[in-house]
Length: 46
Image: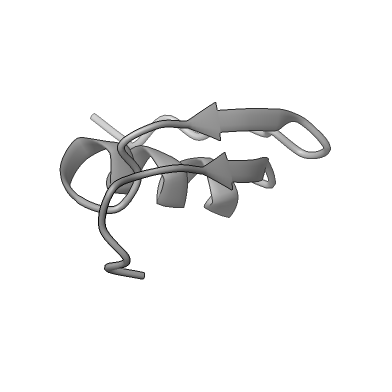
């Protein structure tokens, strides 16, 4: 089974909890798919 890809070019997303764990991975994958990201979290990990 192959990986499903999405095109989020010129879409906006707010990702909470984006400094680690699942929130970080979601933010990274959305960004790789062309989405504009507003990321929030408690740590300054990245």
